[in-house]
Length: 261
Image (cartoon, rainbow, N blue to C red; front, side, top):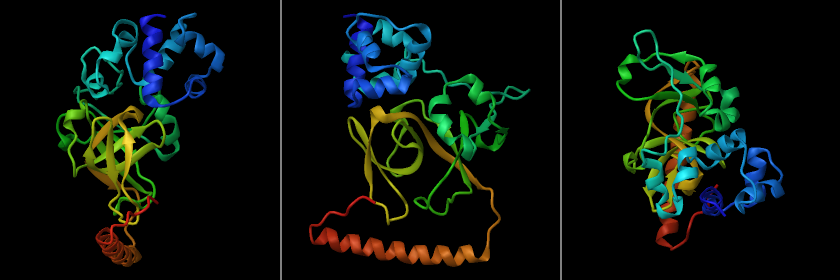
């Protein structure tokens, strides 16, 4: 066994996935991946990069640091864990804001650290946002009104888990669900609890090991002109949300737990 093989085995177990899941994620057969975990073989550079991106841990750390000695959130903050975050700047050196189109949602999960993928995204400049690295993400569903399927949320890149705060909204890039936009309810040692502003949907937990990136809400914009009927729909939704909240209050008083939708 080597430090590298110990690390990837530990990280896989920490993510609570099988060897087959990791092998599929990086384009290998399970027996071939298993040889990397038992130290029989060592991966070529392209697979080393793939494993680094999958586990969200830098190659330096995979090769030189025993990650078992550090809590996961500490690994995300360590200076040696230099996960590549490509950004573009304008002629004045200001960061441009990349826009992830709806058609690029699926590709972002594997392309967020690929300079070529980021370079091909459309860009805008919003100087009023101030310092920080920003990116615009498409919103889908009705879980976070008034944002709709035609909305984009601009997020500021969160470099440390210590920056996140309960009550604020975040774009989370997750291995299991892709791009999601939710409100943070609380954080525990190994997970965060998130909720939708639409009370129809129940809060749920996301493991920290499942999160690749976190972006804090900075602003949003809509690509569709407002329609007079939208106001009526919002009023109906507000009424339904109010009813849902009252039902949840009654259920809590009766000691019942609401199910996640």
